[in-house]
Length: 392
Image 1 (cartoon, one colour):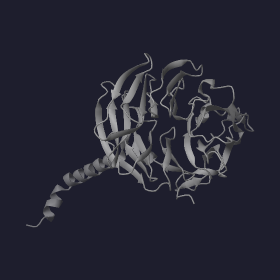
Image 2: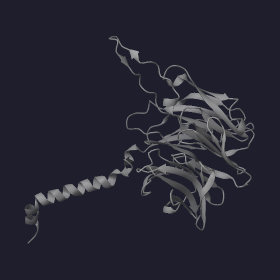
Image 3: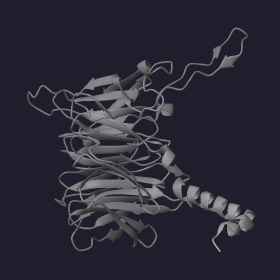
């Protein structure tokens, strides 16, 4: 049974991402009406790709990739949800996709399997209807990433010109895309890579391992420019660069310290800590930053989802038991208004966050200021009447 607000797809979901539909679907030419005037067709609903399965053996649970669109049947006032009817289904045979990276310019979906990576290409016929979409494996691509073991982190840069993968055996590989020319490599560390993130200007790559500092690489020189150290008792988890309103970057890192999960922020010029906030007593299992940089979200092993403001890290939403199992993936939509979360419990859930912010700032302080201003204005205008009401 899916928790309220979740949609079940019948297999444990390990990875998920929103699709850049404007780079994938090829719309029909504008249709002409009876007067000869042409009008563009309505855009397709947002879609997400989900990956996972039951693994090897005869569990009876399939390994697959599916694409699901936003459910148009959701009534006004109801929480948004993905449709139970899938647009695309791809059986991945005996291999379960554990991680994925969707190319931001529509080059396909890169999936990390237990023995290596595989690229799936979009096949789109004329028309902007979801049913015109297909996903096919490219057997000739990614020769450099075949038979290299499980990659625990895979990511394209924001413009899609660089690909980075981090292996369970500690091997870091960074390539130019799509040529697959090597940018840098770090091998034989024997310390698993947990997460990695590109800065928006594609200058830096942050890499978190299962122990040791967070390393920041300069992609132009292929040199390490910073080793971000842990404080006593900290265990680093996920890392994400984000762009601030002045176009500068900030780096967020999740950490567990004792019984608390927290987010640490780092200046990307001096590489010093500039903030830290404890947010939960549950272990953090997923982390994401919204595309507009205004929101941060964490998922926990207990199935909870927490959304905070990036400026003050004030908690805006807490959804306890959003899922019945560990939260495996979080992804904000391109407009930063909807948060997708997935879980081992086979569900994908959407949480609306668009009303929580205005240009990255919580609306509640603004409303409070307006109310106080109205009260002050009223008191000034009716000062004599108010004084007359006081007991003498």
